[in-house]
Length: 392
Ligand SMILES: Cc1cc2nc3c(=O)[nH]c(=O)nc-3n(C[C@H](O)[C@H](O)[C@H](O)COP(=O)(O)OP(=O)(O)OC[C@H]3O[C@@H](n4cnc5c(N)ncnc54)[C@H](O)[C@@H]3O)c2cc1C
Image 1 (cartoon, rainbow, N blue to C red):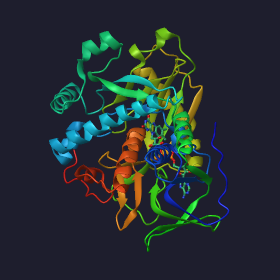
Image 2 (cartoon, rainbow, N blue to C red; image 1 turned 180 degrees about the horizontal axis):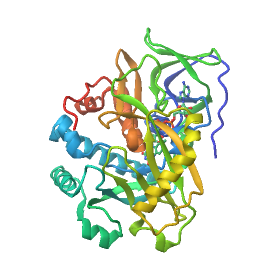
Image 3 (tube, rainbow, N blue to C red; image 1 turned 135 degrees about the vertical axis):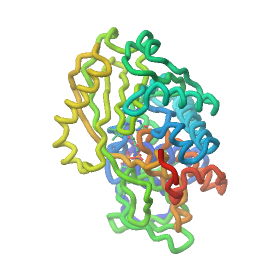
Image 4 (spheres, rainbow, N blue to C red; image 1 turned 90 degrees about the horizontal axis):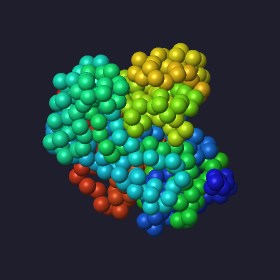
């Protein structure tokens, strides 16, 4: 059930104001409220109807940048630490869903990271060895083993445990329901202006009313307010298709989450009713909804073509086609933490393909920051971190 969301009809104070009620805001609100904070959350549209509803919700711990690439950028120890946190974030999210029995269809999943583009068998072998060294799970599958076990024709793959999938909108709504049970109040409002000059943050709403908060959490998806900037951040769009339900024989082994080791990768998963969802065809030049819609037929055809190339046992027909925009960064890591120059404003942006995994991580990091418990490793995700010197 959707929580009731009244308009703001007066000025008021609260301890923590979360702006944005997508998956990031709902995770933050639930966690902060569970810790006993007084939390309010605002959204200018129905909660979850931003990027969250477009998400194919592959809850991967594997990061958009391979461990190999991340090592080239930041050194092995730092890169391995980031990967281990990402692994922990998916486990933490699964535990949260389990603890509250959140009805979001979450399923534990294995993943298949396929050789693609410039990443062949040799590069995947190196990636696998680095992951082993970092204490991460996974097995290297050579061409023949991949073909025999999964019927997939690629040079090689890494097969790993520890990922999941879920219905992102149901997850978001279920989290908001738990948050409201802990006292969180949800309002229909748009944040227009942030005044950070005093001991609190004063947020001006579209209605002209003001909310004064000790801390503000910005969870506005790919939309960054003017005072926040990062040279690492860019917006991109992604498209997805869902086939009609397939016979069980037309689903690959275990319905593993599939994604490719190339920069502009395709990704595929199955659903509870045996549909195949195929996503990708990302484009950072086409962001506006109308422009994305115009490209829909061509992108759907391209995705079905890719699906057919990957897995010819399924009927390459799209029953649903959709697209959405999301924030991403040049190093594949999110921007999480205090906004530089605005110590009471905390933000989470730029999650790339690991959006929901990072949203969970952001909710834990921001709560720790608010409690004055910042950790040295938070710098790995700092909004004002420098662009990596070496890019792979
Ligand atoms: C096609 C597609 C496939 C994807 N697949 C995956 C995947 O498989 N796995 C994965 O982990 N991630 C995936 N992602 C990324 C993931 O969807 C996003 O990272 C995630 O949904 C971001 O959630 P969010 O809550 O931060 O943003 P959003 O869901 O966009 O929520 C932001 C909210 O803030 C509100 N808002 C914005 N500005 C204001 C304001 N000024 N005042 C009030 N409210 C405001 C908006 O109305 C919105 O509801 C995918 C994205 C797309 C587009």
